[in-house]
Length: 67
Image (cartoon, rainbow, N blue to C red; front, side, top):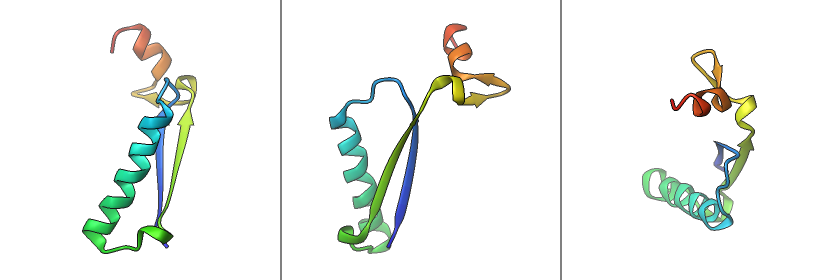
């Protein structure tokens, strides 16, 4: 049973966009690895931008600075 964990920042991804991610990730495993879509699990985790950092800065600070 394949398990895919997608992590994104919590910035307003719509339910439709999340559904597209789940469908696309599932189809990718079908196409590339021949996995059964009925047993493929996809989880989307949304992380606050204060809890996600790049280069020693939170995403919140990077966005405020225009980076």
